[in-house]
Length: 264
Image 1 (cartoon, rainbow, N blue to C red):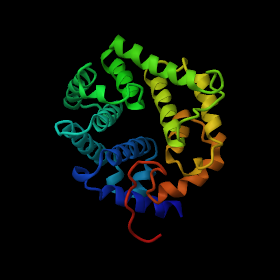
Image 2: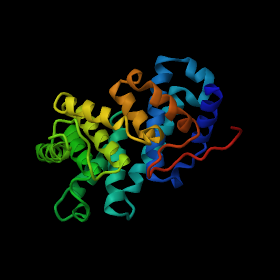
Image 3: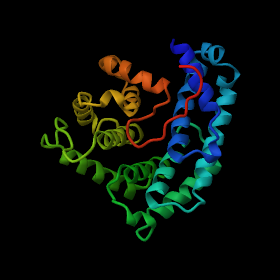
Image 4: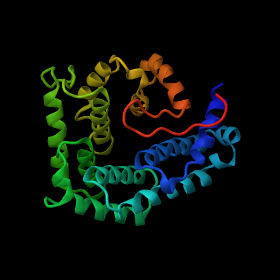
């Protein structure tokens, strides 16, 4: 059953017109292709199942098309929040599919965005995307000022947990989706900068939110579980989320879903 669903999902993803797709959807497509690319190298049977379009050369070409769109978007007018998200997604794709031209565009966008008089001043300084931009600015260009700002944001989030900042609690005034985005940001910082600094807090708060009502509709939880390497610990929740993935429902929150066609 899963094989036919994955074939249908892959077919629909390939048919998405990237030039007119929203930023969130493009980012999800890149994320999916990234994992398919890993599988295509380590498990050749993937290409046999999904066809020529699942071979490494085809996947890399499609990913480059997506990053072209993300880089090109930065030449357009958009809100500060949209620009921040677009910068984050472009930088994220560059961590696993390097392109010097795209990196130069990203560097200019980051430098312009983090200036005190830039559009970034119009949005809250502690948003996850702002923290991610600072973390990436340190990862790619070793900006110590950005590192300090990212740490300040993350330390503030930890202090806001209702368990005296030890990771046992939760964020009282955040929706589930917002809380998962904070956890995602903490994990990203751990991957890029320091995997030990927040390790205990991340695991504790992640365990707490894994029990929240509605978590089995959050595909973001699935990606976080994969990133942490703890599928086995949350296998029941993962099994409940998988049908949403196969139906192209990327999130119960604000993200775009993949339009599915064909038989159920």
